[in-house]
Image 1: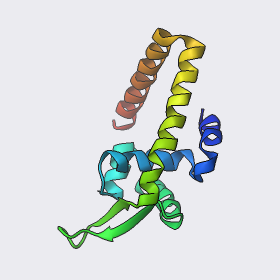
Image 2: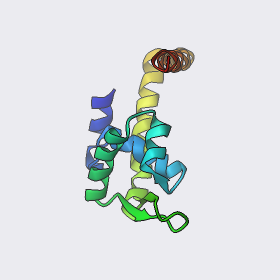
Image 3: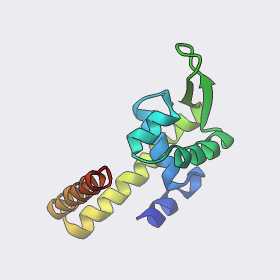
Image 4: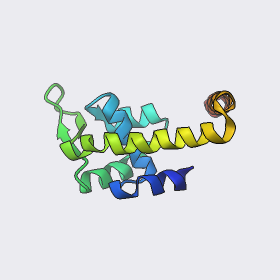
Length: 127
């Protein structure tokens, strides 16, 4: 799935992991690196690497918060905002492919099953 998504989004110059970071910022902009890591349930260092690449390519910028001078906000640039449509199209294309392969009902059950597995693993790892 990751390789397929990467192929579908090749013209955007982003990697699948970066698309997840961008999606978080499309939902709420700005966010701190810690907030992005928490939302994606991954480590700060992992997010930091994605942010370095996104910043280098002009999709995000880091700015000091005007409300809390200790906080660094990650903000979308206009270039980052422009990726929303092509990345969403790729995600929906994958969704439609799975639905076509499995049928809509089975695809929904598959998605629900994966969500349960993820939650079970989170619970197990947090013990």
